[in-house]
Length: 160
View 1: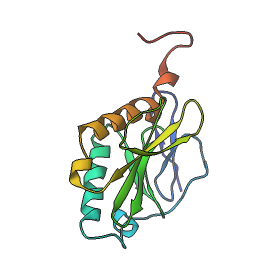
View 2: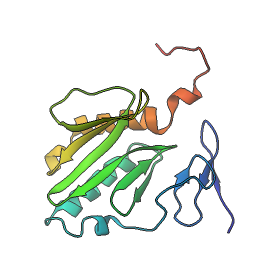
View 3: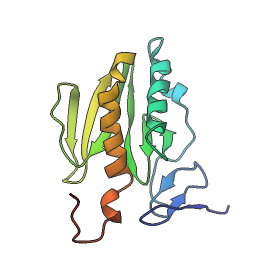
């Protein structure tokens, strides 16, 4: 099967011919398969799948992204993965990575993956949780981590 390259600011991306995932290197390990959002929320309470679909619309509004349901989660990729969700029976955990920590009572979990990848998780159980604040955090995550904005800046140049 022929492989397609997707243009990106830092370098071309490789597209998995099996599942269509965007990857920064050819044959990079990933959760290869074809899954659906509905299968992730099969055991959830009524209305949670609809809420997840609203979140996916929010993710698509951030820019040129790919939203990939996987076996146990959903990931969102610009140049690299920057966000997603983990399903729960009564909602889901919205996940996103930033270069900084957020101090907010809405953040229910934080994971430090190093100075350039700080994961944050927000519990989403109603439409009210999909607000402007969450969207702003996701946009920042897309614009910095997802598109790897720092790779496009010349070395030694500072941003005001």
